[in-house]
Amino acid sequence: MMGRIRAGLTSVLLVMASVTFCPLQAGAEAPSGALYVTTLPSGADVWVDGTYVGRAPVLVDALPVGHHSLTITKTGWVVQEVDVQVSSGVTAMSSTHLAAGPRALAGDAVGTLVLRSLPAGAELELDGVSLGGAPPQSMTIPVGRHRLTSTTARGKITRSITILPDTATDVVMSEPKGDTRSAVVAPAEDYLPTNNFSVEGNKVVVRYGGHLVVGYLGEREVRVDGTTTSYDGAPQTIDGKLYLPLALLEKLADDSSNGH
Image 1 (cartoon, one colour):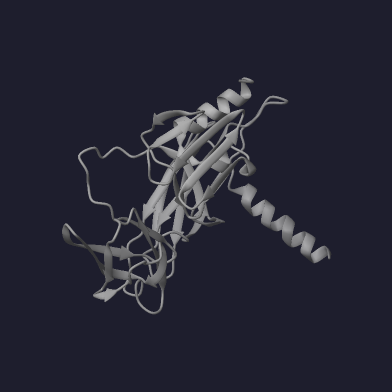
Image 2: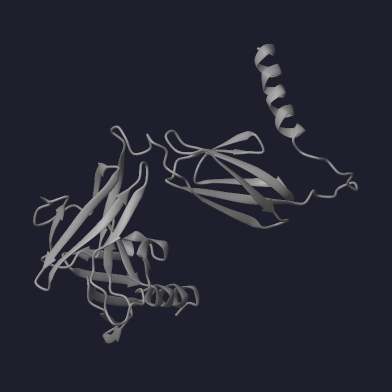
C-alpha cells in the first residue's frame, strides 16, 4: 500500500517539477490557460512538456502561461514536435496534420466513409464495385486512396478520396448549385423536449409552447400555427436525429421562455 502511495507521490512531483513557480501574494491565483489538441488522423498520442495527456482530440486545462512543447506520435506516422503558446484565460488551438510513414496505410487498418446529401436515384460505385441502390450512409473501408463514382440522370462524376485510420471522412455528394450557402439547421432535441416533436414517414409535427408546427422532410416551407413560412433550411434527419431550421427552433424556445 505504502509503495503505491509513494509511486503516486513521485508521479505528482514529476509533473509539478516541470512548472516554474513565481512568488504570489496570499490568495492570488496563478495565471493559466488551456490547450485543445487535434490531429489528422485522429487518435494520436499527445505529450505536453514530457507528460502524457491522452489521445487527440484532447483538452488540457490549467497550463501555466507561456511556451509549451508538444510531442505527437501515432504508430506508422512520423513523430511531430510542436511549439505552442498559452495565454491567460484563453484556449489555444493546435492542429497537426501527421506525415505518413512507410507503414501508415499498410496492413488491415480501416477508417470510416460517410456519405452526405446523396442525390435521389444516384447509383454509387466504390473502386468499381456497386454499392447498390440504397448504400449505407456510413461504412468502414480500408485506409488509403479510393475512387467514388456517382451516376445520375445528369451524368457520371468520379471523386478520389483518402481514408485515414481511426478517422471519419465525410463526402458531400450533392451537385453544386448557384447558391452554395449552407442551410442553417440544428438538432431539435437541443431546443425542445423529445416528447414535443415526432416524425411519421416524411411528416414532422411539433407541439411546443402553445405552437403547432407541421412540415415535411426535405421541404423548406413549414406551417406554423396555420401560417406557411419558408426557411433557408429544410427539416431533415442526420444520423437518426431530427434537425429543424435554426430560426424556427430559436423562435419556439424564445416564445416559451417569454411565456408567449
